[in-house]
Image (cartoon, rainbow over all chains, first blue to last red; front, side):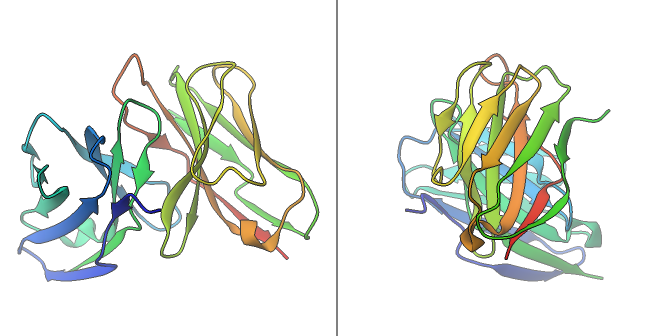
Length: 111
Length: 114
């Protein structure tokens, strides 16, 4: 039972354009959402998070949007850079420790 | 500045063999986790430990045991390895509940069971 879903396995964008990565969830109890970035042969690293009491959080080129009624969140990267090429995981948790991850989306930013 | 350290990085086992994956963190974090990553499945939680002396099952605990040896160390044991346990295993820690529930991951341990 995959409670966090990333339906696009891959995404390719041109350098300088916007990258939009999407994530859907089924558990309405989730109250904290995160995005992690993973390079090959490394562990995932934290990118940005959002609490369920907000609908937007920005950090430099990265913005996360949360639509609770649709159970949907998205990550916008503007402008995209070749160094952003990685696998991006969406994650969600509620009440604390049990954090669930999506299957990941591989982003390729072409120069 | 080690963060989360996992050993070994690579291991090949035969079906039925046992082994232990070791994990240590130096950030004084309360919570520690073990995940496995499989193609198309993302990261799935095996076990977690909210504090020293406590452990809880995650999504896929069958075939695994864990020990929270002290605040720094959290080990994952496969008693009788099966080919279905071929995967990349990640240990992680977080400051939760005294801090944000943001996971810091180790570099991973690639396990192959023949």
